[in-house]
Picture 1: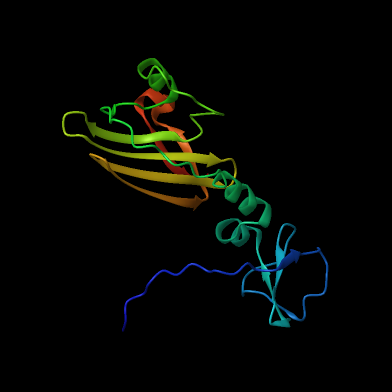
Picture 2: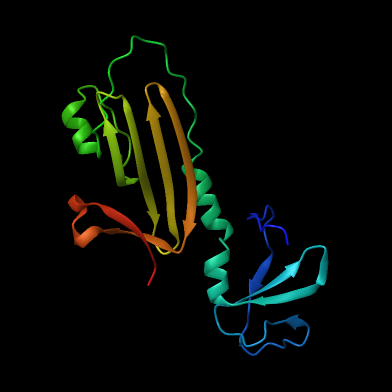
Length: 185
């Protein structure tokens, strides 16, 4: 048997709200599932007769609505700016929030909430010139956008991933002890 590989769907899925009491004789329903308020009826855009019921639980676990996707796209719609090649100054590797940055960087400028992404964990070495960090931005009731950064000298690598159904939680209810990403309860 071959090994399974994860794939992400590229297309959006047309759906409409399920109406309690509507006739379901042409709509496929997974065995053991009873349609209820909050569910959706999905349709195959290539074959409108092919319709199926999506439970509220499946909807929240597997799908994002267009409004949520638009909000996420807007977060990354800021224009890209070019940085001039000026003499390099040694970067501070121990910055963990905007307040610390303001206290240590005299010409820092911040627009909006500079702490939108909350630090989850970080390791760095000023003398070694390296830093690794994980930051997350919680979208209440939906999930978290997680950013992982690695810097070695002037080389920087970053990855961003949206994780559905999780939130940020302070360890022992104290952000000074750190934060973690946990599933919704």
